[in-house]
Image 1 (cartoon, one colour):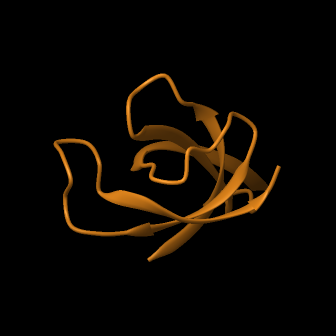
Image 2 (cartoon, rainbow, N blue to C red):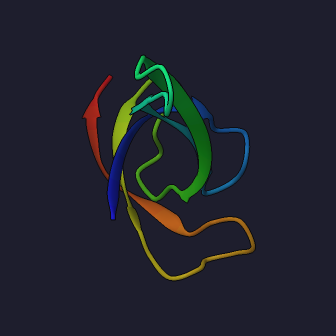
Length: 75
């Protein structure tokens, strides 16, 4: 599974906090709503806050890390 998100935190070693935003329709009113989820991802590429990255699922690296950064899309 691949997701695209924005890096919002890099204070941990070899770990980045990535915020993934998606649009879903409200079940009753059908208005599109923004849902945001944050993932802890394994960071070998040394990304910076504000970078757009593509992340992919992988084997569990730690208790909370189940994704790794595949590529940096933009600054």
